[in-house]
Amino acid sequence: MKISIIGSGMAGLTCGAYLSRAGHQVTVLEQFPEIGGVTATVRQGGFGWDLGPLLLEGFLPGEQSHEILKDLGVTDSVPVMRRDRGLSFPDFALRRGEEYGGPLWRRDRLKEIFPDEADNLDRYYRFYEQVLDLVRYHTLSDRTRGLAALFAKMKLWRAYRKVRDREPWSAEELMDHFFKDQRLKAVFTGILADFVVRPSEFPALGVPLSNIETAFDVRIPVTHRGADAPVTAYVYLLGGCGRLVETMAELIEGNGGDIRTSSPVEKILIEGGRATGVRLEGGDVFASDLVIATGGARETFLELVGEDHLSRDFITYVEKLKMMQSVLMVHLGIDFDPREYQDPALWYYYNTYDIEGAVEECQQGKYHEGRDGFLIYVPSFHSPELARPGHHAVTVYTIAPNTLEKGTWEERKEELADTLIGEAESIVPGLKKVTVERMVLAPDDFRKRVRQGHHSFGGLPPVMRQVNPSHKTEIENLWFIGSQSESGGGVRGVMVGARNVARRILREGK
Image (cartoon, rainbow, N blue to C red; front, top):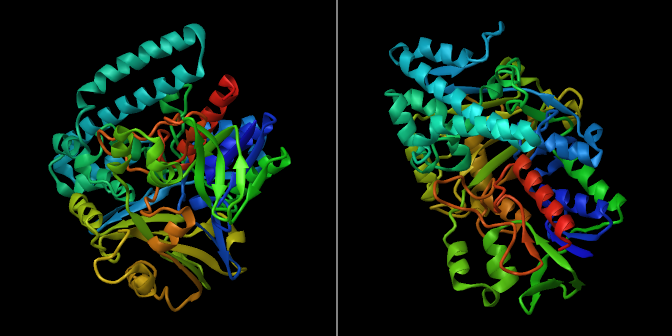
């Protein structure tokens, strides 16, 4: 079959790798001059920086992304290093000690900081273990067959019964149930700012899954209480995420596929309710037996497909999809080693305990200019090739609204980047003075890179009662994959979703 894939992010590349390997004629059409979407590694002046994935899950042996690379025969081309991250709040930090304190050392440390909440922390961590059991048995039921799968499903049901009463709750309700101190609640809900999702709209069962303890100490075993299925752990892709992008692109081209950059699709061609190809903005037409679209849901369905080919209910559904906000990302090349001020490579600095209020303001278009928090990431700690000799690559970024209340991002991004660097200098003094290279990426820049009217960093937000668009669309022979599809966001999620769609196409022949 002739297959056109719109977009060269990890969803499009993964799907293209599987389908081209199976002998299909695959053409990947990327509107931007570079492939990879937000999984790319950008370079300038002898430095390299990732655009956002940072610590990734799913890439250790037995985990889903690793299994995809193994299936495609390219695990050796994407080396990884397991690492952890740190957290700081206005009046305390959670930093792993030199001596290993066990898999629940953060619980014990939090008991020292919040002695009145000791019993509540025990209750929360019992719930945490129950949710991890649920995930473990779900993984086992997917990976096993026959009696083993049956037993895993029975255990899955028993694990679900222990937590199902809290399934309808929000993260805010869960935190109110367990804790009294607002500061302690922020420890477990601060990560929601990454999604620009308020605790009142985030599902309760997602809180433990967003705060898996392996993220905070590389020494914690990845097998949960000796189980067969590993607990998620976190890794860096050595050499940058662009290495993963390049590996998948080489697979497609090695299988006879074609990847075309600077090739924006103007229309998905529909005849008789079937997708028959795509037309580029320059007028070139690619007749196709299948079209696989990635990227924005609104852009794909309302613009490329067009409302004439969609039901009114589906149009309304797409129009009402809730979006994330964007980021301001400042990439620096510096001429000194910042380990004196930050080690490990990734650290989250929260300057507020009001996660609900801070996220709500961002959703309303109010930019905090770094005062509510930011993160600092030094990729050259694990990948020295991302910096000049004797230098380091540094990224400082924070969540930001798509549009500013005053002025535009194009007008103000350098000014606001200076302000953000000023906030980061509270951690790394003199950061601006030691900068020898700088690249600022604001929401406008990300919109151009991913061709979305509203840049939703990370895909659609994981909010309660929102269902992402299905991979299988209303249009015959048109599939939808990527971070705004049913797979959800994250590199692992889009890779798994793309692989599953490729398998369905190969199995069904369409």
